[in-house]
Amino acid sequence: MTWQIIAMILLAIIVGALIPVLVQLRKTLRAAETVLSTTGPKIDRTLEEVSEAASRINQVGRSLERDAEGLRVFTDAAANLGKSLKQAHDSLRMVTAVGAAVGPAIAAGLRSLFTSARDDEAAPPGRRKDEAESAGAPETGAMDARLESLGKEAPIGHG
Image 1 (tube, one colour):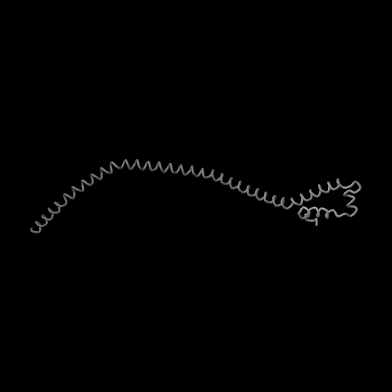
Image 2 (cartoon, helix red, strand yellow; image 1 turned 60 degrees about the vertical axis):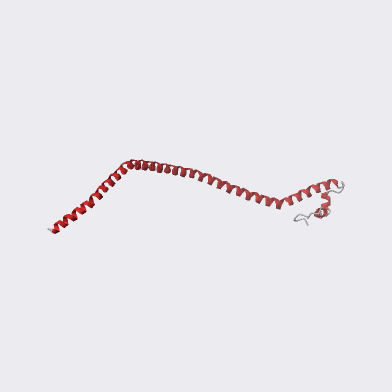
């Protein structure tokens, strides 16, 4: 019997200690239920808004992809224009180089043509250029002398 009394006393102590814990647990669970019941709809609305935002972001992404495709066409056109301009620049450089190489020879030829025509007109009637050539007069020597008097060199093939 003593052990029964000791067991009853221990049971009373445990029940006495558990009652405030159980009351506090009940209050905590009610508060949690209240919080969940008020925040549940807010969380649902927030999730819907997040879903809508994600949908808009996806639409913006697709729009940017389409715009990027349009820009790709534009950049390709700009690249092709750049290539064409470079080819035109290279062609112009080649024409300029050819013109610089051939230009002095053409100028010298025209100068000698017009100078020879003036010399023929200024020559006495009995002695023309064709007569001087048939007589063996060196034509290029006269032109070389004229160019040297002007301080210029004779063109290639005239000296």
